[in-house]
Image 1: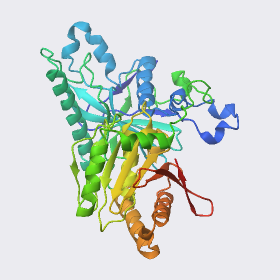
Image 2: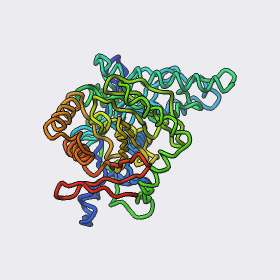
Image 3: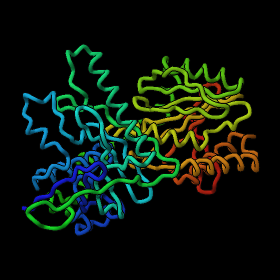
Length: 442
């Protein structure tokens, strides 16, 4: 068997290319077994929520490659060789797959970041990329000469530090550094903010043929990994029936923990300036988040299912493109094993205006990335339509405005809209095929 080594120079460390592809819904109805014969199971089998778990897929493929070809791209073989006696003092460089970013999607590419750990500290960021119509996987190390990549490294380092502090605060004597074997940094996803102009980040490739000859780049098809898949089989892949949106919103606005925060925002809305609260699954709000004249950023959404904020007398009393973008971020914050459909954004405005949007897609649907330039253009269109068509003069006008914005953002059908009247009546708002609006009371 050929041997492949990793050059541990200061820049390029490793990359390995693999043929793969996740399920393509267009082919599910065709029964074309040949289409699936060379596909990886890790990218064709959804979990119980109907989600393709990209991070686990990337991690499995690289670990499996190490097992089959006696390589050590992950660095995990070195950890095993240390033995149990030294598990709390491991210093070798390795990838900690217990921490990962959310999958990031742009154009035909999906990528995930993982931290590279040495001496209990994050020293680099590994990346797994699915591209070329989801038929090619590539691994590498982010080039830290790039300013954005430095920010990604900083986010992971801070997450490791929070984990280490948490372990120490629980009273463990001389806790090992987060990221050592026996103390993995299982902090869930590290939500990474997309760059202003979305693009695949720069990363270094550095896998070379080793002693023993043989060319190639260390890649292979699913046969190489004994992981060829077929069409998703019945059983665990069908997502459970979602709860009634009316019931979910009714529980939200009447929750004894959430209601005081909503009431505070109603009182704030006539005064100018936006405030907001993040909301946990049980209704517990965060501390009040002060915003700007016409915006509020909920920031890190980990541990929360949604957010509420107010609009102002001079603002448009409808959820804006940045609000919709933050809804997608809350959906992603539910993780691969949570339910993205729990994500919501609520808005209250003067004169009793009150709307809630909820996410109606799966995790993969939320992997939509907008640059700041795109968001700015969506806002310009949003405000221009409101001015030209006097959308703010009626509820129906505002609701049409939102649906046109969803079409601009190419997420029609992935967001539900509900209106809450001053007497507490909830109506689900839908757009008909002729462009008219129907409000159906719950």
